[in-house]
Length: 149
Image (cartoon, rainbow, N blue to C red; front, side, top):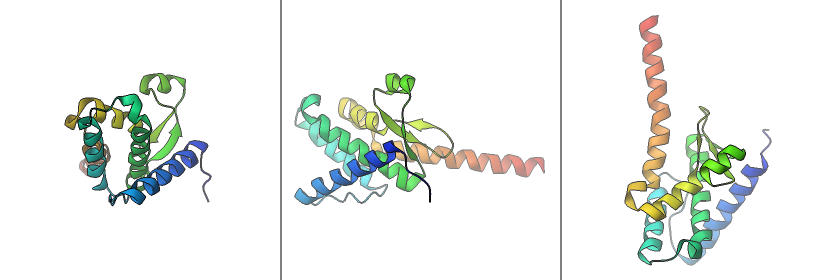
């Protein structure tokens, strides 16, 4: 059995607690599916329309970022990782996810970007672009290997 990192344990617990709290009050379909990221977009848009200051909704944004990262973990084979000092400075977050191909992403920051910039920063599209990139790259590699055989 593979040991979990402190970042993984912390973020998975945070995401689960956030989902329990949100779904206890509302009937939101936060089921860790890719389509549930549309719900995340919807929630963030509601916070934006409410003209909330970011500081007032920071905990909700963090919870939504944890949830988004957990969707990447469960659906795209990512793993929660602690960022090193350079990554923390770059991303402005302590943790993120590493995809199976080694790429590192910042779902916590992506939720904040959605809040700041609106629709052009869709969380669902974020998933589809990250996951799709790996699939396209693998398909290209298979095609390349087939030509060279």
